[in-house]
Length: 451
Image (tube, rainbow, N blue to C red; front, side, top):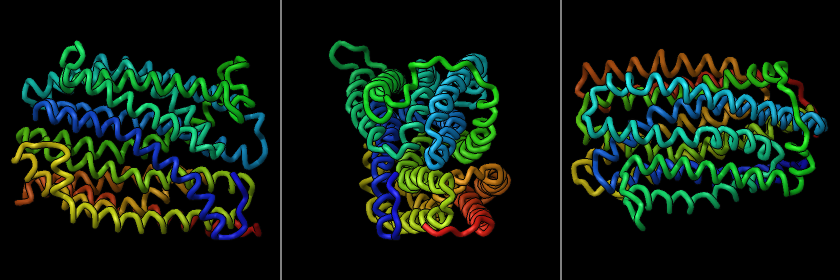
């Protein structure tokens, strides 16, 4: 990362790192977006089935891949401290952890998937599609976690354009595979929502293969010789990674799982409500890629500055990121309000689903401000390797405040299904306030340095 001595130069450096991350995140999320939208054009049952499957898979994946995010601040601080020789072993140990996680997910899923789906009270077609979608997706778990580690390594070096290239290359592959397996084209059997899982799994293998070629062949990654030396399992490095990664993963899991829990609670309503809720949530989550990308960029720049003991620069980058996220949230909220009919029509042509999705999107507007504060601060704190308090705040704000409040409003007021969304908004707001206080404490306890 280039050293910047003025706010204007720091803004340029930050944007040069942020923009590729944003494109990458939008691209990765587009796979889930394509799964949902393309399945919805087959049948409402396929849309609902993929919605339920995604609601179970997304918190598991994001939470466990969050553990692997520990690679980013550790490598970033090593680069900032000019300890590049220690980087390869960190990355390889991260891959080992990713392999173990993949095996555990498959084993646990084998024994728990049927009991979970059976107890949800779903219509049989929806349950069948959800199960098939998840089974198909499971064949792509290993390459997905492998790529997560490689991406953390590449991004920590500030070469975020590389992961952007990988993602943009994989998108047309995913679209084509979705087209083939969902709709049954060119002699391929029509699998509906299950085909979306097949397409995603195959795409994950393509992403992993492209990443391997790049880190082996391209400068500066090949200079680290990641795969030329055999590294034994180091439980000390595993401990260092897990000490940072587990709180990150748990914080992400608590945040994403509350959305999944709400979707599962929605199973008490009819298929139209489930499909409408998922469509609106899918789009709100798509817009969340903006503050999330800023968060990931802040982890990189703050991590490198903290590693170099340039604490004043770390403060300045955090202000740049949070301000930018707030401005973008205002734009996002305005867009949702003005174009909610057009957004809803992306997901469905069913008039009942379309009308209800528009109502859910009104509530999605209020997600924007809280996300714009919370996500960048989380990224900044990760750059400082401060993760334990963030995990605790996520638990309290989402599961102690957000979900119980949403349940009460949904069950005992006229808000009905919308009550869960009000609870989510309250949880997000509480988390944003707590994180802001924590960041202020951390920065007040670090010395100012001249750049």
